[in-house]
Image 1: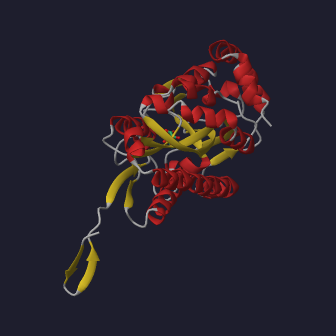
Image 2: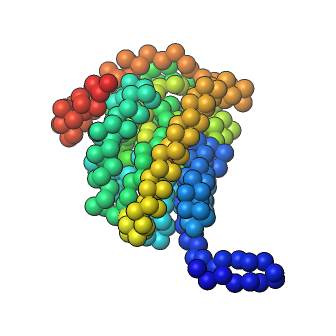
Length: 316
Ligand code: EAX
């Protein structure tokens, strides 16, 4: 390694690689924790040879745009919910089926087990290295119009959805008027009344200050939303085997930190949002919501295969 003595301080001139990563929510969030830990672990594991510069709050675009940039190689990394992912890797769609998972523990076990790990391999042929599953959280409904005590109360609500075909089909099953929209546009759309409501995990609702533009929340828990750390495949393949291991290990540490923050947000989110004025329906008759989606679920079983859905549903 060439070393240069300048101003009496020995500096070792070594090549430092700077990569970019992005999320659509604020840095003070579960996803912000995830990518900050990922960056710290990669810098530590490569002794500063690789630095990841993080961009928050959709400053590089929404999740779909960022995933597209990673696929094209104009951005090395992106951390995203699985919302827009089916547009790139259709095999992942099955994970977005409402009421597929019993709870977070069930979802984490599936994602960290053979089913989820095999799914990560589906990304390779699409130009991505999927470093690890992470977690967006269990999604709940919010709106500015009325309390939602049962599925009938959803009928006719104009709700923003993720750009996700499974969600759109399912929410139409509730009689919701669906508006797919990139996340960075959601706060303004809610503020201006372009849509009445949206649905997201408590972590996202809190980080995005939706209490300022949404009066009502119902803990429907209708979808478990995985998240994922994606890297441009060519950029990953260029790394030495040792550095590839650093990235994969860093992603696992980051995922644990992100999941821990989700647990923290789930523990105190309702009280915090109530303090900020939201009216929260906590005791929800989930069976009523599940029953309303029976016809849509029949469609999903045809589309994805009942055996595949049951393998996830019954995973212990
Ligand atoms: O990943 O688009 C969404 O509602 C996502 O949950 C949000 O961007 C956090």
